[in-house]
Image (cartoon, rainbow, N blue to C red; front, side):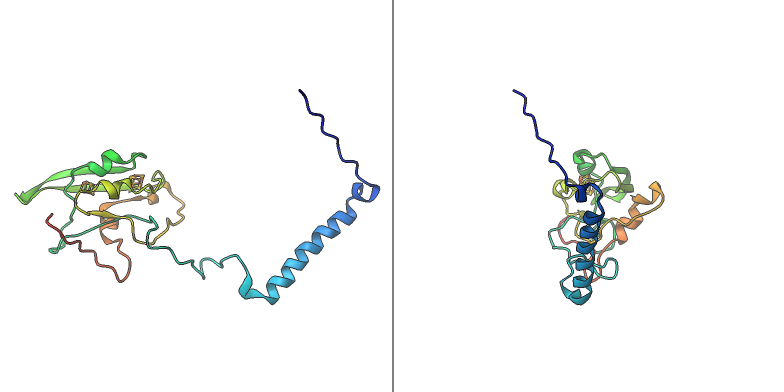
Length: 170
Ligand code: SF4
Ligand code: SF4
């Protein structure tokens, strides 16, 4: 069955658009004046001067946790790299010097352009070595390479006031 939609007939004044354009401009003007008078009620956020509070459970940029001796907590087990659905984690393992630290990551990069912020890497990590609680949203860069964060960046990417040390047996 076909449905035939009736086209609405426009009046002469509607067809010349002048009145409609003026009506549209009046709406814009009304909002402009209202926003200028009641600035505290404006719905938009004046970013970057104003920033919205990010909830504690929000998954933001990654950071790599440290042990008490400031060595990297990651044991290069590759679980996060394996579970990552976007294949954006790349780890190169090296042999540790003591039996307690059998392996450690020589290279650890995350491509933030590919990351979908699912948090699987954090969930998969058996030793709390990676977290996504920095509260940092991805910055805008001009070059693709700038979105690839290396181990040095991730080791230092701790939000102010938080400890980079994670307690535990690993
Ligand atoms: S948040 Fe998800 S997509 Fe991003 S690195 Fe972790 S596992 Fe991969
Ligand atoms: S961050 Fe965690 S899951 Fe990923 S390689 Fe290191 S120890 Fe394993």
